[in-house]
Length: 237
Length: 343
Image (tube, rainbow over the protein chains, first blue to last red):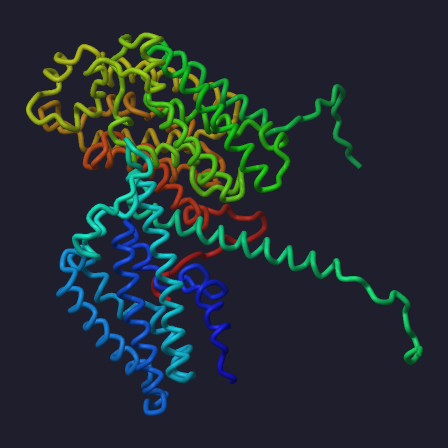
């Protein structure tokens, strides 16, 4: 199998094969922590870090690991990296670490990470694997932050509250109150809100794909037809 | 060769869905009158506004889905959803609350699943639950009977001016839920508005909905199974767990039958042909399930009334009920379903 070009990897991770919108992987953290933008961003960064490092390491180890035991080996690598991230978060963003709680150790079981390790990194060179990890992490993170921001907006009328948990004191006043005197729509913050917003995002993506396909089709039809004559015998010179 | 001997006039059945929905709308009139008599014009304003919102949402989403707008609006099913929702919402709930509730009912509860006949949940109850868990304060503000005038009510709905503090009063179910120290007699003596059994407000309203429901039953719009099942389930549960009229009372069976949304639920919600069970036995099981769940939520749950939650939970169970209660096809043996012990 020819290794995919960087362009292909980018397109796949961000749109065509987006882990959150198309593969629907890693739904547990996607739905569980997306109740505010800061939680979503924190977990998105942590997951992306683990994904980049695990893809690189798995790709380096792909020649050494026996196929029969590859999955346990990959999980060991991912678990070790997750522990590193967990300790880092405990050291630098302790409050966020407490809020995200169980979802940080659960990065180990995030299907996006194991899926990319087995599906991509085990077959490709380290540079491509690292890049794939970056793009997949970005694709997952963008959707996660979008859901988080939308739920926060619908739920409280403001976005990016409490960003100091992640970026320190300078981010204390990053909160954007878009709808002043908002009553608060509790459903968006509660678990059903995650399902509804994710469903709407998937529907939106499918609609855009449909529109693109229609446009491509229309352009094809417009191409001028060279000859309408039916040729029964050989080529007429 | 036997030809059917039917003489003229051969009445042509027109749009059946439309006829059914019109009858249901007609049957809600006693309940609407009772609510209006007790709480003033708030109910009527709710009805008009909810209907307008629902028609708007339905038309908009039909255009988006590229479906014929007039054809689907003319079956009146969206109006029934709007009316049932408006009757369930507190009178004088703010305009945006009704808007959100009808929007969720029509767009998310009905059209996103594919329109009438495809929705697994009762749309009106879905819209109601969405606003109930999102806006608990507004949703528990029921006025005391005969207190709110037209103008001040309208101002409250539009959010221009608020009604004086304390206009909202706890309903009988609320009072029963938070009551810790009073016996039933003392509780009722304290609240003159509670009337004889389920609250002056609710017992009259429930009797009115019962009348409307009996009219629909008489017209054969639904069979007796689901409503009787629900009322029986509720009555049996409240009889079994009736612990007298002390301060820890769960309320008498008659109280539970005539309070809250019991009759509205039994005759207008549980009988929904789309989201309920299909066979007669299935309907009976569906109704009993709703009745039992309503009592469980009322007696031990976190909310004072539980008709909407009970209906949604049983909607989830309806496909399974249908699977196990499919009637035997004539000429075939009854199929065995599910697991059989000892095989």
